View 1: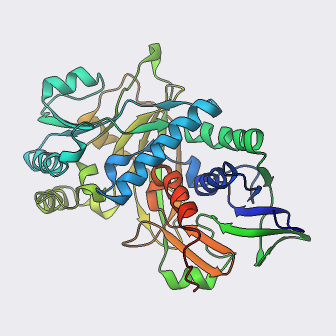
View 2: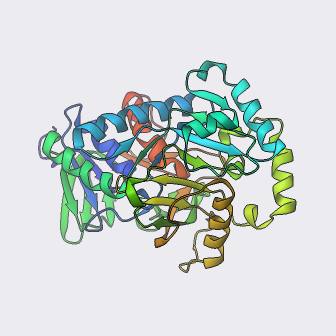
View 3: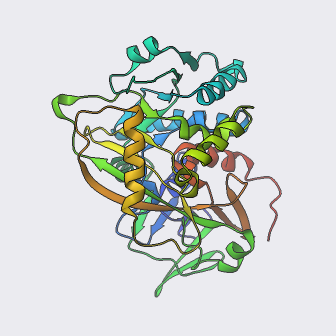
Length: 384
C-alpha cells in the first residue's frame, strides 16, 4: 500500500456492487475499506428475489458475465455458509405465441444446449410440483439459475470478507465529499489509492452533476413474501410465466415476441403500463418471494399500490399452485437504471470510478463485472 494511505481501495456502498468489488480487490491482496451510510445494507440488494438469472441475459458477453457471477456466488455460498439453491428455472407457457417465443429462443442458442431444454407438459410435471397444469402447453427449462436469500447473503458476505481478507467495514458512515485521494464523512477523513463509488440510487450526494448528464433514472419494484410453506414443501425451480418473456433482453431477438407483446397490451394493458412480470422463488427458510412491478422516475412514489400486488398474485395463480399463499410481508425496492445500457462506469477524476446502473440485474452481474473491472483497470481511462 502507498505510504500515508489508509487503504489501497476505498469503496462507497456495501450493497452487492460494493461487495463484489471488495471481493475482487481483496482476494488479490489489496487492502480494502468499505463505507456504508446505514447500519447495514438496506437498499435494492436485499429487496429482491435473490435470483442469479443468467437466462435473462443476451448471448455473448453479458451471458458469460452472468455465468462467471454464478460461479463466484456458489463459491462464496460454500465458504461464507449461506443458502444457495441450484434448482434452475422454468418458464411456463399457456398460449401459442408464448410457445413460439421459447421455441425460437432455444433454437437460437445451440451453444447452450446442455443448459436449456424445451419441456413437454409431462416433462414439466416431472420437474415441479408447483405448476398449474390447466391449459399448459409446455415449458422452458434452464439449469443455470441460482437462488440465494439476499437478506442472509448481504450479512454473511461482509463477515466473510472481514474474516478472510481483513476488509474493514465502516457502517453508519455517510461519505459526503470526495477530493482524491481523500474521502470525507463528517469531521473524519480517509485516504486511498483507488476510490470506487458504488452508492446505488443515491445520485444526489457524490458527483450529482455527473449523474445528471447520464440520463440514469430510478426504478421502483413491489414485492411480497409468503409465510413458510408447511411440511417442508419445496418449490424446486424458480417459476415464471409468459410475461417474463417480454421483460428480459435475452428474448428480444425472437421473431414472435412483438406479437406476444401486442396481444398482452390489448388483453391486459395494465401489465405493460406498470412493467409487471411475475416470478416466484423460495428462500432457505421455505418462504416464497413473489413479484414484481416496475415504475420508472427519479422521484418514485413512496407509497405502494395494493392493486399492483393484486395483479401480480392473480397472474401468479394462472401458472402456479402453492400450499399457502398467505402474504407475510410486502415491500418495494429501488434500483438505478440507464436506458439502453447494462451498466454505468465513469471516471470523474483520476483515481475515482463510479459503478452503477446495473438495473435489475445486480445480483446476476455484479461479481462478473467486478472481475472485468479488475482485468481492465490498467487500460487507458476516459475522464468526464
